[in-house]
Image 1 (spheres, rainbow, N blue to C red):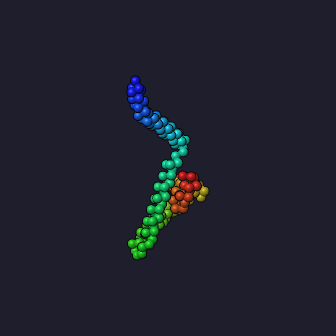
Image 2: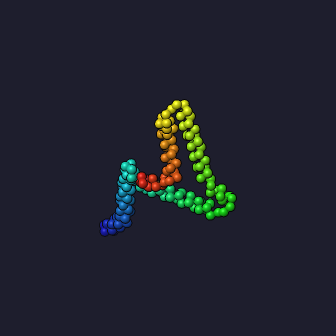
Image 3: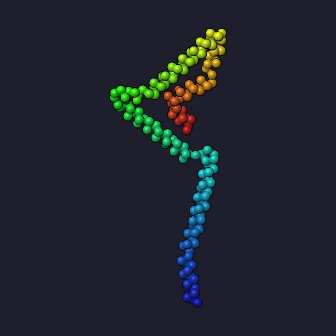
Length: 152
């Protein structure tokens, strides 16, 4: 009889760690599930800090890459380097000149047809034109500053 009890105790003591590991794994799974549910609740409430962190990091990496590109262009000399440096400013100036030409032409035409100056300006300086100017100004003079101020 003692041999049967001894063998049962030996079997029970060898199975005890496996049973304990099973309950420990079950507890870990329960904790991970609760953690995932809490993260989902936080994301639904707008607390997606990790996503925002990676988005900001990507923006910073893109900005650094563009700065390095501009530095590499500015370090060159000669005609090709000058052309590379002048592409964006020339396009900006050309489109601004085109815009001013169109607006002045439309203003003259409106004044020649008998419209008052205030009526013509209200027609020319509409919401679309304001949006275009806001986009241009924010692009050239502080889109990153505005994003930081808004907390993006």
